[in-house]
Amino acid sequence: MRQATGELHRALPAPVPSRARVSVTVMFAVAGVLCGVVAAGIPALAHRLDLSAGQVGAVLFTWGVAAFAAMQSLRLVLPLAGPATVLRIAGPAGAVGAVAVAAAPGHGPLFVAAAGFGVAFGVIEAAVNAQGAAVERAYDRPLLSGMHAAWAVGAAVAGLLVAAGTRLAVPYPMTVACIAVLVLPLTLLRTPDLPLPAAIPPDRRGPRVHLLSVLAFAAFMVEGVLADWGGLLLRDGAGASAAVAALGHPLLQAGILTGRAGADRIRARAGAATVIVWCGTGVAVVCALLVAVPAVPVVLAAVYLTGVAVSPVLPLVFSLAGSVRPDLAGAAIAQVGAVGYAGLLAGPAVLGLLGGVLSLPVAVGGLIVVLGTVIALAGRRAA
Image 1 (cartoon, rainbow, N blue to C red):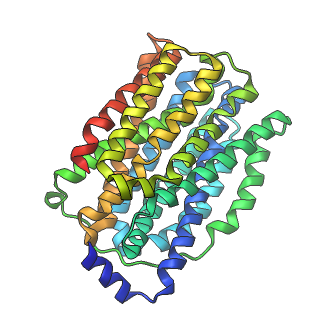
Image 2 (cartoon, rainbow, N blue to C red):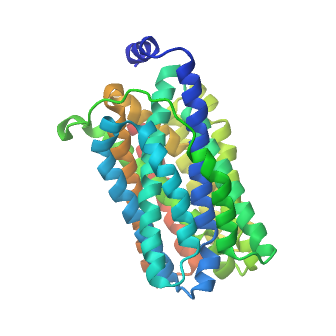
């Protein structure tokens, strides 16, 4: 890794890694905003379009399938075009896609908009993580968790704006349109290109990439389940008001921000394996409490604390994927990200099955307890 880092420093002018770090951090924030405005608005969409829990799950499944397909295609595209070029196209497309989802006039257009937004969002996620891992290698120290913290800031701010709009009776599509107008100039910022080589041949990815993919699958599902179902869990499972339910997503992102803000320093001292094991254990313990006491204050606290506990896992997984083969980092990150998004795909389906026989708090909390256990068990070996 140090040899690769030295080569990167020699190949790039000194200011480029710094400029790239700033621009990548901004794009992480933009990705968080786009995800936040859509996820926090799910209760409003469900109410306006009279969506059942199954239909909400189908919309989220469509979003995830589209993102998964986009990430799979990027395994070949990223090494050729570079993540910076990809981001300049996908960023504006994501902003437009979020508005299309919010303004969908019926079930059919909603599914089409969710698919389009999923493609743009999946491309943004894969490209920004590949670029972030390249910046981290250039600095030769942990940075990716801090960059991911910007994602949480963006998502939390977007969620709070959606909650405020709900409180003030501002139509959800208008809220999203205003946010998209503010975000659009940020998507056009030029990100310096950092070199990414060719894709990893299938027989050279190795078991470590597969283990990292398992961790990404579990962590994505934890974050996705709480982000997409947290509002419904508060409203339908705990009996919270619509305004309180809208706070579920920004509260989750506040927890994620808290955890990621110090994750790089903790990793530098304790090591990646220890941090991942702690994270998985914390997720399981907190959500066991949610299952036992599904009251509004407990659910709110559990959403926040689960965000704190799970937050370091994905940045660590992407960072470790980038270091398995630094010369082939872009393809490894796209592969891990694609498998991770399969966790988002599986989440609605699994909850749909569990929700048929269990209460929503038991279904959501029990699933996350299992996922936290998987993270704790797989973490040490993968790291």
